[in-house]
Each structure stands twice: as C-alpha cells, then as structure tokens.
Length: 215
Image (cartoon, rainbow, N blue to C red; front, top):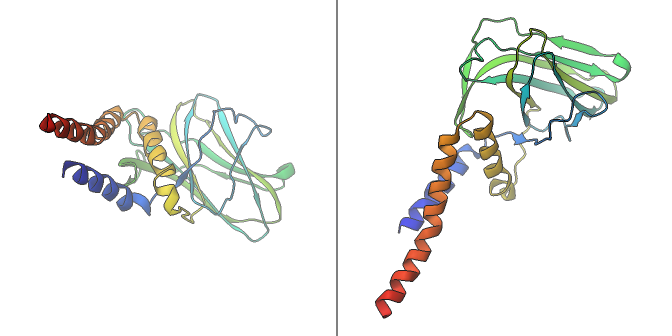
C-alpha cells in the first residue's frame, strides 16, 4: 500500500507539471565566443538554458532559421536574495552582423514575478525578444553583462512544447534535478532522494517480513 501511495504521488507531480516544462539544454559552460556558441537544435521548440554569468562575461548561443520564421527569446532571474536588480543584456546577431537586435531590461526592479510549477521556482521576469527572421541563415544570441554584475539567469527560446511520453520519465526528472541545483534548493533534493529510497526499501522490507514469517 505504501509503495502504491508513493508511486501515485510521484506520477501526480510529474504529470501535473508536464505541460508547462521547457526542454532543458545542458552544457559544459564553454560557449564563451561565437566559435564555441551553444547550439539550439530548433529555435521554435521551447528550450531553457540555466546559466551563471560573471562580471564582464558573455555567453553565446546559435541556431539556424528561415526567412519569415517567428523568433522568441526571454530572460528570467531566479528569485534569490542578491539578484533583485540583476538584468543582463540580450543581443541577437545575424551572420556578418547584418542583423542586430539589442534588448535591455528597462522596467522596475525587482520585477514582475511568476511561478514555474515544474521546478517549483519563482522567477523575476526580464526582457523578451519577439521578431521575424529577415533571411535564411545562422543567427546568434549573446547574453552579456554590461553593468559590472554577476548572477544567474535562465534563457528561454521558442514557444512550442515538445515532450514525448518517453521524455516524461527520462528528461523531466533530470531537468527537475538540474533546476534545484540551479537555484541552490538542496533541501528539495534531499527530500526527493529520501522519498526515492523509501520507495526502494518497501519491497525489500516486504520480502524480509515474508521470509521471517515462513521461518
């Protein structure tokens, strides 16, 4: 019975948050210039990239697009003490700099909040970029510090959610764990592992009791 309760609880959490999640792009933090830009596989799919950005640093991302494609990108900041006034600059650049769109956050701080149910995290909204691709080619997104600040941000690209049933039990658990590390929520990680260990221990205890009864 306990095992069933745990499984139902875990599935309820995953299925409830399933529809609102971005696909997470993991990385090794090496995308520091145009040549090493992190590849976004399909700019129309809803992706999220978690980043730490130091003073005077920049992170680079790249994608292929067709003329007339709609493009969306946004930056949000996790609601963590010390990041209330953090707002890096978002820049979109085309090949040979033929297309450039710079977006600076100009609203009040700390900003409008929204709650992301998948990771159970509250964010402050920053700038958004919506534009139409002018011609076929390779494009770059650059997130850079222009205020001598360091902090964390999440870059979202695309708006089409694309999770298969298989992803629900593979990518989503990893994405949840990565989210918790991103916002330094180690308590939730400990609790989750505690629940997992408890689930694993139930059949072991049941087998042990069964054998003990036979003896």
